[in-house]
Structures are given as C-alpha cells and as structure tokens.
Image (cartoon, rainbow, N blue to C red; front, side, top):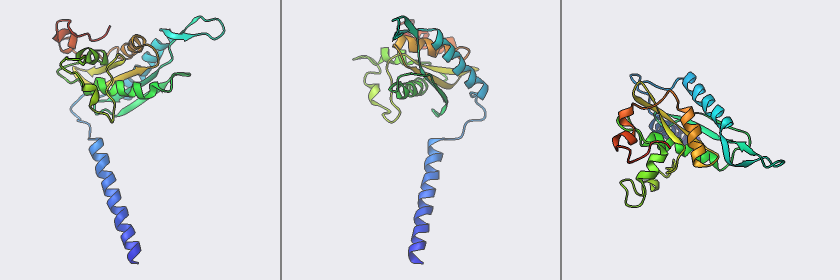
Length: 205
C-alpha cells in the first residue's frame, strides 16, 4: 500500500510539472490581436510551394539530361508565439533542411515585432563581426538562430502574427520562395529594417 501511494504521488507530481511546463511553453493567444487563420496558413504554404515549383534550382539537375530542375523545399510557418502551425516538405527535399527551415521561421519571428521587421537576411547583415548584433547566432540555441536568407516575418493589420521559413536550395532561392509565401502578409513599410536604416540593411534581395 505504501509503495502504491508513493507511486501515485510521483505520478501526480510529474503530471503537475508537465502541465506547468506546457502552460509555460505555450501561453494563451491574446484575443485582441490578429492571428493566422487556417485559411491564411493554407494560402501561405500553397503560394510558397507554387513558387518553389517555378524557381530554377541553383544545384538540382536531371540525372538523365543534366537539365536544370526546379527547387524542392521544406517550408515551415510559425505563429506569434513561435509555435509551428503547419509545414510542407516537397519530395526529395534535403533532409538537413528541415531543421534549417524551422529555425529560419523562428529567427524571423523572434527578432521582429510590431515596431520592427527583420528577415534572416537582415540579421545576417547586422551580425557581421563588429556589427550591432554580432554573435547573436550564439543565442536561443534550443531553437536555432539563422543568419542567412530564407526567413520572413508575417504581419496582419500592422501586427506581427508569425513567420515563414524555407530551406532546400541556395539562400537566394530559399528567400524567393519565402517571399512568395509571405505575399499579402507584409509589415508596414516604415518598420522594415531597410526603411529604418535608409537602405543600409537589406530586408530581402
């Protein structure tokens, strides 16, 4: 009986700790803020996949003819709380790009806000040696911080609502697909980092 009671107490404690952890990791969405709807997410992913299928790959060729092929991408969308809300992996996309695409989405979300908009290309420029965000790539190691193109924040009604991250080809190709996915979810022009810096820091290519 005593051992059974101890087991119950242990399970209760673990369950409570798990609930507390989940609550901490996923705070409730603010009902006053805009957010990505399922229709928004589906459109973002569809637009990105269409762009990938139309974007010539930097690296892929036909094994039979050597003719240039189009891109094969992993595409992730995260919400304002950095939770993955959906993703798509195209056939034959690089396995190693899964984590990169996820981290690109996190990075674009994590360093943007309602008052500033940064892409992963922007972060790459700002984190060069001696730059204002130098060594920022060493932060947030659990999520991964990416300092090259392919991550773009998403906005609705002037508010940050999430981000898209794309990986699977050259960084310019990744960014082309991410920008296509983000169409219709652009930040207010004045908060883009290229506007804030007078063109000194790029937003996209």
